[in-house]
Amino acid sequence: MDKSKYLKIIYILFKKELMSYFNSPIAYIFIGVFLIAGNWLFFNAFFLIGQASMRNYFALLPWIFLFLSPALAMRLWAEEKKSGTIEFLLTLPLTDWQVVLAKFFSALFFLFFSLLLSISIPFSVAYLGDLDQGPVIGGYLGALFLGGSYLALSLFISSLTKNQIIAFILGLAACFTAFIVGADFVLAGAPAALAPIMKFLGLGSHFNNVAKGVIDTKDLIFYFSFIFLFLWLNVRVIERRGWK
Image (cartoon, rainbow, N blue to C red):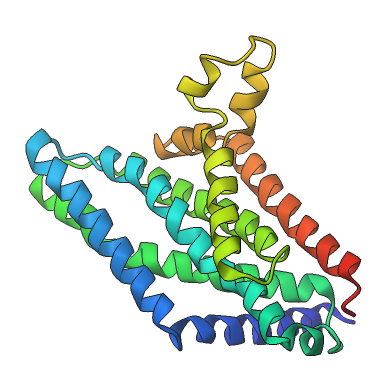
């Protein structure tokens, strides 16, 4: 299959998955919760602190995404398996990678769209004071990579079960573990030999680096590698189940 046809099939599947979000209440619930929770929590503290900074907002995003990303991804495989449409989908002349990538990028684009709707926050903060744009750009970029990592992990979890609630709970637990494994309070009780490894493996430690406005290639490579690993595992699960 030539490259253009390969990408065209992914794009067709991507549009189908993306439209399925907007054709269900989950999209509007997700956007509403994300914007209301993020804006309220941030501005509630912003006026008390009295500083033109979005540091607190980007400190909140990982925890908001921690709940919303598994909610976005839980249906992507679990619903297909429960409804029985997965057998039909995987007997079409498609590769496993095309299906997995289409599902992942549809969820990632929806996450990006939700982030884009929050752009009024930096404009409001900049209007009220002198906002440093570097950490803002880094914060949004870090949030997108972190959200993508959550989604890849949650998508993999969704491929292991046909129950959406179980997929959500396991995805939430897995994302939480991946985020805090490199946190300072966890490292404080870890063996000295394991601490550097745990810090490197933690999604949170890399997010904190990028959110400061310091775009280091090692952080980007880590996120790309993390996302690829769980998409690859997702493909392996599909192949091993013998659906095709």
